[in-house]
Image: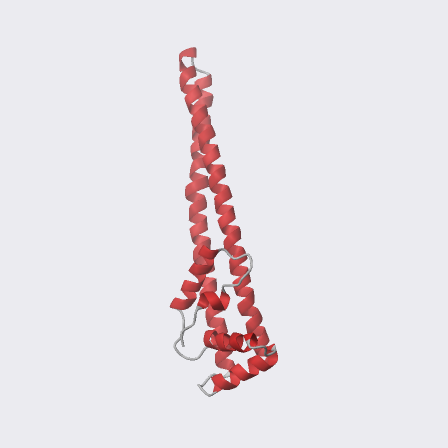
Length: 183
């Protein structure tokens, strides 16, 4: 049974396609061979698309899956497995985000601080240093603009990741709660 994860989870409103693809790739790489949450969700979703209500679709999908060895405990364990995969991706993203902030904002802030100190020193020098002052002030402004642009981009990426992650995580969480309640 081939599972198209984008079809299974791709309707997450507010999701960033690039982030969704990254998260779905991680899920695919961690996909289990046995009948698990993903195969169950695909069966459940297919039954819902045929007009079955959630309860009937869940029970019908579970009855079929139980013939392949799926138990409620195994289903809940695999739901947790995929939540763990998403959490690992979230942790990796947090580390990458921290590195981006360090490389793109903190380093530029330090450079701005260093150049401001040099600028103050030059203000005390004789008139012939005025040209150097102008160049340094221009460079400072360019660095500020670059740092601000980087900050905005990083915040947008963080917000898109969080939105996509939350949507996907909540869907899996709700599925787990639904299946736990119904089954």
